[in-house]
Image (cartoon, rainbow, N blue to C red; front, side):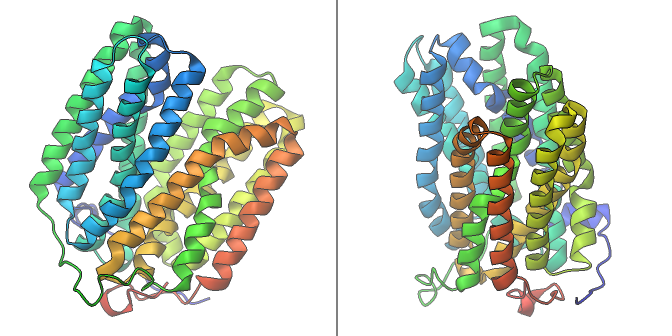
Length: 410
């Protein structure tokens, strides 16, 4: 193991590496707006528009999947130098999505699907645009810490937004319409703030414009592995509620407690744990190790189910630690593997793999759960260990020194 000396960045360094104070505020406002609306979009379709649960869910899924089609043009736009403008666009397009949502007549599933599509484009575009901006204003391990800080801020904002929305849900359909309107105002404010930062990058030259494979085979392995890794993000939201409520017949409060604990741990530990791991191992090694931690936690869930909801909730802690290690290393590894002229397309492809995993995981998890705990947790553990082994073979390498010329070091 190669060890490097990496000191934890000061708050001022972290804010500067994260795009500055105005950009940090934009991220927080955007996250709160997203938390106000996204977790309750299904309820909006059912309660406000009078659509059936199946029709609402199908419209949302089609919208999210169709939103992934925006990734290739986004990647090309980023490689032409767009940074803060692309981030702002990902926020402002959601303003349009909210406007369409508020204009949908009662019972109109087609227009609801259009609103979900527009919102999906913004939600899918944001991670790649944000990562590209951070890669432009920071380098090496400071860049990794800034990416981790952005995720912590986003999770905190999502949690606050979802909590505020939960408090307001007792107001029924009028409250949901008001929440949608407020979230649209938040997206507008965030977009204007992000645009005011005015960060751009040098555009790709004609010589490198077509080199979509410039990052080499390692990136392809990471993208394929990421489809499996990303299932961990839906474990607290889909797999655990399914097991707790339908298998253990526990109160839904257990599911809520697990979700809240997951959010709190991510907010509190994302930056320190990412920085700690970065000081000891390469990004590829951390990503491979996160797969081992996740797979072990999946097997832990399998063993914990007979012991009741408390045991399942306790195993959720190491699962969240694996999620933190994954989130702190995956985007950072893609960024380090990729030469700057094709970074936009690489990040767009990474977001495509993430979106694919997020789209597949609810259906896969529910199907596996129907076959029993062994099928669910055993399959998740085996698939994640396989992804971890693939990353370990091809992407784990010596720890980088952190800046400039060694940007391809992983």
